[in-house]
Image (cartoon, rainbow over all chains, first blue to last red; front, side, top):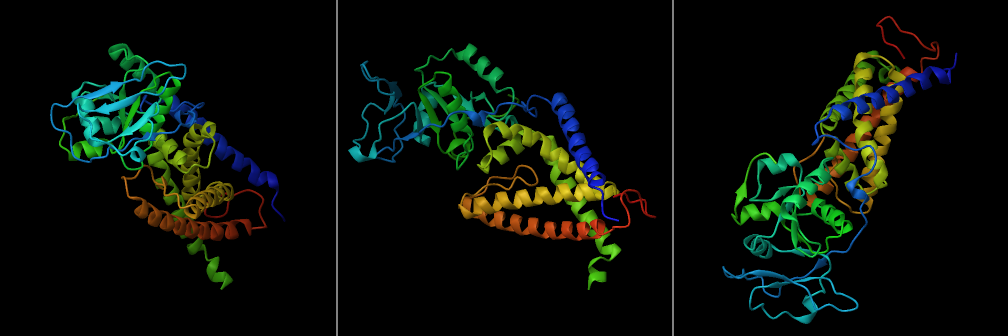
Length: 216
Length: 161
């Protein structure tokens, strides 16, 4: 006797149904760091282009040099902000410097200078990774967790960053894209001076810069 | 040969291996849906609106299919789901391998960061593993879909189809 399609279809659909109900219940009971919104994703943020401005010299900047964020004079077509390094920036070959955009990648020495000058740092990694260690004073803003918006609201309420104020964002370096996703989200919210620490927390650790541990 | 391939002990072993592998794969993902959403996103194959529903549903589907196979209930339906999932996973890996886009498999939850060459090697092994599991699923399907003398019900071992 051949199989009745119903004899397979019913348990087939039942398995999917049970999985759906279990997913609904477990997601409803999940902690914020394990919860996912059924609709929407941070990956839905619009794409953007990251400007990479490579310093002509890889020499670390001497201590005491300030990292300074500046904007060009106002014009009909305002250019994006640029970052100047130190009092006497090393001469850069024209072809090595790309006009900076609202989102720009920065190197370890630039991130260190940004840290020294008091710029806010946002950690886009998961909150568990943040707990295990993060850049001292960084804000925990895990881009894949559902309470990201609340965390960003807390950050904005505490630091009150203006749209043109620089914000440094980092994750795990390498091909980690969490910082880029967070930058896209902040760009969408009107912040247009976002600096992505390209090599991220592993580089910060390797340079033995200040880190903290503990709950976000 | 046919009798060997359809030997009940081989079928039981294939069913249990498939079931246990899917249980082991599901548990870390059930525990951390955001991590799995990130893993799916890295494949760059799905629209953003589909990421979170997939990350929430797939691990539970894997879990119940694995349980069904281990417990010997709804075997045909569970094997169908598992075959479909394995085919999808293999396809996703193969597409990303073909375009030299290294991704973390995400098959058993989040993995430690690795270099791109390491990831490409891992992807090849994961693809090979998925093909092996597909063969096991084919063996189970062959056994249970071949039982033309039943529509539903249980055999003497209490196994329902």
